[in-house]
Image 1: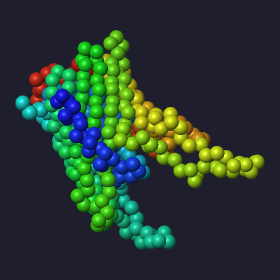
Image 2: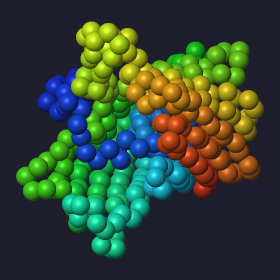
Image 3: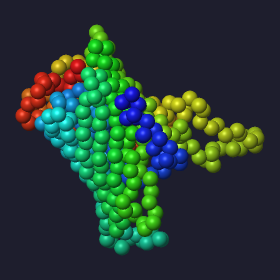
Image 4: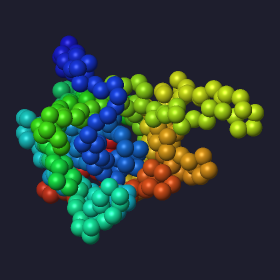
Length: 353
């Protein structure tokens, strides 16, 4: 009954805030905050272990093993843009585990130009920042809950905007079967100040559901995420760009709209971890939507595929990932984690009990 009381208000609220058109601002609130997360496709909300970066993305997995963990994440993004994350977790007795983080995105310098394209030699910048605090705590031996509070600022040339948002999440773990499940409501909030007066825009609200399973007698852990439950149609499709007349016969061509299966799989991201040793892991992810929408017909390549590695050197954990958004656009993530002090439980390398 307590679980139903926790979830029901958020489903009621979803009917108010969900945007059918899918248009929103402050997209940086959905940036991946760790190399491990990006390597698994950008979603891993069901994992529950001693990796505190997972708690930044999903506060319900914050736990005592995250106490004292400090993380730095740098991302070499697209077109000379980059961003970085830093986070720290601290366990508060009888309260829960607190996580604080900051993200700074730099999109580089841009030259001013008039309507005809003539440049005047001066430049402007574009930057965004996200401050976040989260708290997670167990309800019992299987369920845990958590919430994030976010404050974001966006500064694009002379325009600025501010927003506040919250995440609400719940996680379930069956440690005997090494199975996990998670549900999160992300970015429930609003703009405090818009770029233009009286023109408030929606935030990137999303409902994501995920499960994970580690094989009992093999070093594999699988994650499955169904993202953006609040909106069925995620497909970018413009019928005006479709060829309507056959150039050889002159006959009309029926427009091939995305099928039901396309719509369904556009919500799915899968990931795999190969736990090769106590101190070395391999990771892979596959994003169906990215593959479907961003793959050029002439050069599909590895669009939609991500991969990464993680290893431990003494007290330092290092993770790297490479995610292919398009054959002309690749992101590179590197995360460095260390721990100050000790927690009540042994801190293994991303061990899932």
